Structures are given as C-alpha cells and as structure tokens.
Amino acid sequence: MDYKPEQVVQSLLSKIFNTITAGTDQLSSDDFAVSWVMPGIPFSFEDLDFNLYGFGSQQGLGNREGREKADIVRERYIAAENFSNLVNAIPTAGKFIDDAKTQLIYSPKSESINDIYDIFLRFSEVAHEELTEDQQNKINRFRKLLSETVEYEDIITGEKKTKVVDGKLKKAYLDYESAYRDALIAFNALKLDALNSNDARAVQEFALNGKVLRQKMGAAYDAWVSQGFKNEYQQIVATIDSITRRNLEVYKKDLLTRFESAKITNPTSGTDFYQTTLYPATFLTENNWTKFTFNKEEVDKHENKVSQSLEVGVKARWGFYSGSNETNYSSENSSLDLKEEKFKITFSLAQAPISRPWFSPEFLRSSGWRFSKNSPVTLFSDGQTPPKGQFPFLSRSAVFIKDVTIESSSLAKAVKESSSKLDTKTKGGFGPISISANYSREESDSKLKMNISEGAIEIKGMQLIGFVCEKNPAIPNTNPDISDFT
Image (tube, rainbow, N blue to C red; front, side):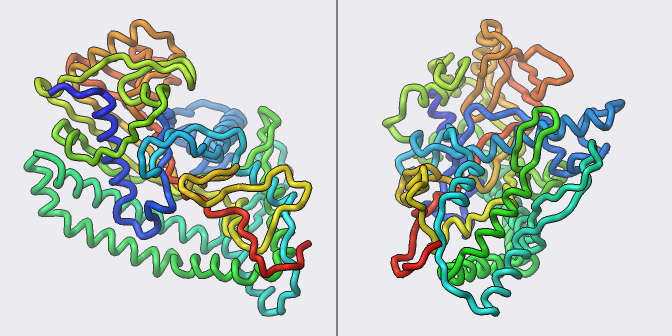
C-alpha cells in the first residue's frame, strides 16, 4: 500500500508521543504539550559532557586525547552557552499540528526564559505584609532546599566565583523523577509494540516481561515519593505560594541575588549565559535508553491526531524534506510503497529533565505580585488552550534519540538521489529524524555518521527531537484581595 510520507511521520510522532507521556500522573492533556524539533538537532557527547564533568575536568566523553586542558575548558563553555540558548528559548504557540493542541513544531520566540525572568524580577511589584518569624524561617529553609549558592574556582583565571546550583531536595526530586520516567518509557514502548504490531515476538515479550516492567515502574515511582521527596517538593511549592501571597519582598530580593550570581561569562565569546543542565548528568553514559521500534503495520493503528489546517511550510516537514532555512522546505518524494518492502524504524529513546537552578517557576506563578506601571510586558500567559502571551510554555524535559536505522528501500533511494543535489549546509530530515545531506562525509567532527545501502539508512549519533513543555497558567494571576504592593 502507498502512503504519503506525512502519514508515516504522523503515526511515528503519535507513537513517540504516547510513549513519553502515557501513564504519568504529572501531566494531563490540559497542562502540557510536546514541541517537536523537525529535523532533530545532532549532538555529540562532547557537546553535553559539561553536564557530567563541569568545566574544569580533563576527563570527558568522546575523543579529546592530546588536547590542552585550557582548550577543553573553552570548548565546554561554548557548548554550555549554546545548550543554554537552545533549551531556554521559549516555544511559540502558533504551530500546533493536532487539534487537541498538545503537539507543536518547535519554533522559538525571540525571548528566552532568562529574558522573561529578568523582566519579571525588575518590573514586578510584590505583596507587602509583615510575616511572622516562623513564616520567614520556613521560607528561608525552603529556599535552601530548592537552590543554593556555592563557591568555585575559575579554572582559567584562578578567581573565586559563585554559582547557583539545585538544593539537595531539588536534586533528589529531579534524579528520581528521571528514573521514574525512564521506567515509564520502557513500559509504554513495550506495551505499544504489543498492542499495535503484527510482530508475535513483541506480543510475547510484553506477556512475559510486561508485569516486571510495570513493577519496576511502580518501584521507581515509590522511590520518587520516598527518596526523591516528590510530595514534599509539591508541598513546599504550595506553601511558598500560600505564605508569599502576604509578602514576597524578601523572597524576591533573594531570587534576584541568585539570578545575578548564576550569570556565567563565556571566556571565548565574552557573552553572558545562565547555565542549564540535564538530570541526571549520567544519562549520557548509563544504559537507560529505551529501544523504540516502529513498523509499517503501525501506520494505520496509531490515532490520527494531525490537524488538517496546517501551514504549507509545516506540512512540508512531514515527509523526507530538505531546505536551507526555517521557511524554505520542500518535499522530496510523494509516496512510500510499503506493501512491497520491509519498512521499520528503530532507535534508542531517552527523556531527561531540564534543571534551571537560577529560575523559580513557583514564584513566577504565585499570586502575590503584579506588573509595575512601567513594565514593558503586561501578560506572560493567559492560561488558555492554546496559551497566549510572552511565555506560553516552559520546557521541562528534553527528548533524545540515538543510533537510528530506517529499513526502507524507497526512502533510501530518495535520500541518496536528493543528497547528491544538496550542498553541505542544507538540512534534511524525515519528520524529527535528522538526515545529513552529505551522507558520504567522514570528517572527524561530524556529529552524525550515515550509511545508506539499497534497503536501509543507518544514522549513528545522538539527536534532540523535542521538548515536553508545561503550558503556563495565567501569569500574572494577582490575588484581588492584596492591596499593599511594593
């Protein structure tokens, strides 16, 4: 049977979506969306090993043998700044691909999260009412559990500096949340294969191992509650909101200090950025990636959720496409004949929570503040579906894939024919899967290694394909009973 490429990609995205979101109590369709990066952004392990080793360590992932330590440090600062700029870009709310408004094409706004947070800290007026000594002590204790300021030595200058890191409770929360999500993804992937595939082995594997994976998922959730302080963290957030409705003045001053302390200067570019990392940092090296499989029998079985009112530029990105920039995309083939060929996509899948110790979403979402009259912004989010405003979404976790194999003779032929016509800077992809135009290149700095045979495309390397985002509630949501602001 012939399929439009967009039909295949649509079903592929639907299965990935269900794999990373189904069954979690943290998210409902009313408060989250997945922002797909199309095509995916290639990452080498060197691009992300600052998560694991910091800036100064000579240890590292990938090939750094014989490199000077100062060069490694500079590279890590550049990588950390690039990563911060990428994950702190705010997705726009204008390119949804489904009628339920839960999936959208990643298209960043010009403002970043740190830009929005800076405006908030400088142009907000906060509730002013004297707190009791007990309330003030509780707020101070909670702040230290969520984030803390530590001193470190600049490896290049030897200067003593400070930076903001996650507090002990927040670290534990993110670590155990990540472990739970890994177990959830593994269970969902196996379950979806059994439900939607004609592969008898997939059905048998779920029958044999489904119970074990469900127990593993339950154990991970229990560990998140008992050792990751899941309930305590949520209680702290609720308590902060309750107390700070009366007085946010001291809390705001502390957050402003932490925000300024978190600013890092890239020694190579001289520009400032706010370090943002993934949890756990060891996700790069641990064997916690889930094997994901998608075959031709599943194309018709996954729910058709794609909106019929997509923009032309968005529709062009569904099949195998190429383009030189964000607005110039064209489809390279009109159909895929899956009846006469074995069609199968496999890769490893992982989701990692994003840590921003310098950012306080619980404070931003509290009801004890309002914009000042001279604020350049009056609305961060209206809290509707889809949300409108300067800050409609907050990306909570990043979705990665690695080592992709696409078994399809028709797609391999299309990629090979198109690649010979495209220059080395042209983007190419099949939905969220990045396909390098210059597939025969073998330079050592290439982040994706591709091999194309008559019947398959193999893409070695890691790609960022999306973000799981929270839809922001109404911000600001000022308590009408507050009359005294400062």
